[in-house]
Image 1: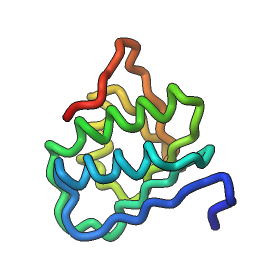
Image 2 (image 1 turned 45 degrees about the horizontal axis):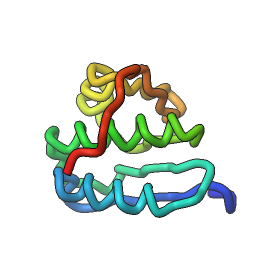
Image 3 (image 1 turned 180 degrees about the horizontal axis):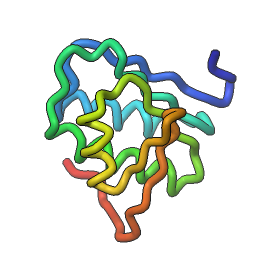
Length: 105
């Protein structure tokens, strides 16, 4: 159950670069302290969407906001880890990227 200070983003269908951009817009518009991004109903996951997802997670973490990701396969978790976003067993995501990452267009 989400508290009033947390936003739940349940995704389904295809998660591609365009879907990642739409998610970023929703994340930016949210004033919630925390965000849970649920991928459990995503059928097709395009690896190219991981870059904008990484930037979004890094931005949220730098704002002091908590991020939980759920429903990712091991492959996506490994790629996020390679990109500097570490997903713990409980789904919490932490960014270890130190350089500035502007939002891509």
